[in-house]
Image (cartoon, rainbow, N blue to C red):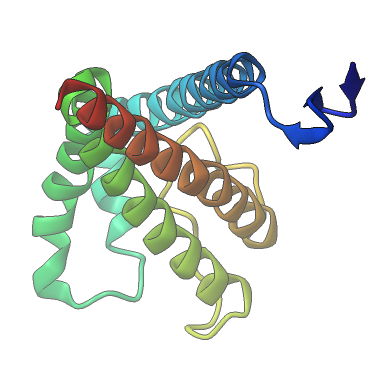
Length: 173
């Protein structure tokens, strides 16, 4: 006799091992799909923005020099940001180190979100966007909201990836 999600055995409500296993498989499948969706979104975003900075490097450097950043950091950031974005894409594409890639993507998106928020509240006065062709039509408010949304999608993906890796590790023991 079935009572909710518990089967009755001798009058006592005991969860069926089969039901628990099915629920675990469903949850694991959900996590894998969520992670995959977040990965595709992050990979596309970081790949195209990183590639844009590489192929339009002169324009990116010009826009970077209009940012309220220390002068000494401009040449470093002009090479570091595209390398970080494309390197993060590479890390996310390798299953064994995907967690590192997701973590780095979250850090990048958090930094970009903070910067977009500071630009939105005009803490530095008006600042033109140095983000490239993909986002040049966005206002700083839209940019902040987009970056925050991406960050908030990526964070659970990292946690789910961690949980799946932990489950995989426990199964190997």
